[in-house]
Length: 211
Image 1 (spheres, one colour):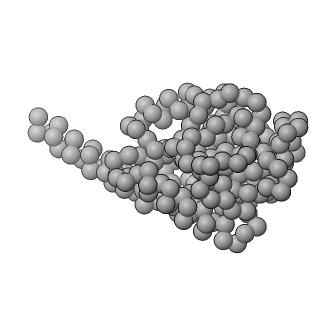
Image 2 (tube, rainbow, N blue to C red):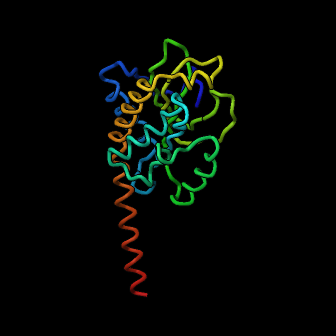
């Protein structure tokens, strides 16, 4: 859970009531990741969807992760779902596990955040790592090379109570848009890295059979 503010690394903003919100995010995310991954086949792309289903406002991450899996993204590349959430208590160990399983992964992180009343319902795509926990005054590990945040409610006062009283309808709409946009924007990158990994494994198997 972050705290929204002005960010020079923000590449786009879209409100859930904008009918073009999904396409705006797709275009911006695809452009951002293309610049960061000139050779996507050699660098696996992972999604870190941070939050917990124990708090309505903080469930954006796991709802988005579950949406990604339902859209066909391999579950081994999605870290943080309703069944297996990634949150403050297990974030560092999950980061370590991901880096142990995948060599030099490119990570897109997703999290909810709090902001001003007029910005509630806004989704942002951003360069650089996510800093989870800032919205509730926690110091947690940074994660990601790019990140997407959704402003789910108003910050500045009794944040935990605010998160518990966030409307589920709002969070689910945001998760649907973010998940759909991420799946569409990154599918080619994910497929390229999967194909490269399969080719590498086949080559290694043939080499071992000759030994």
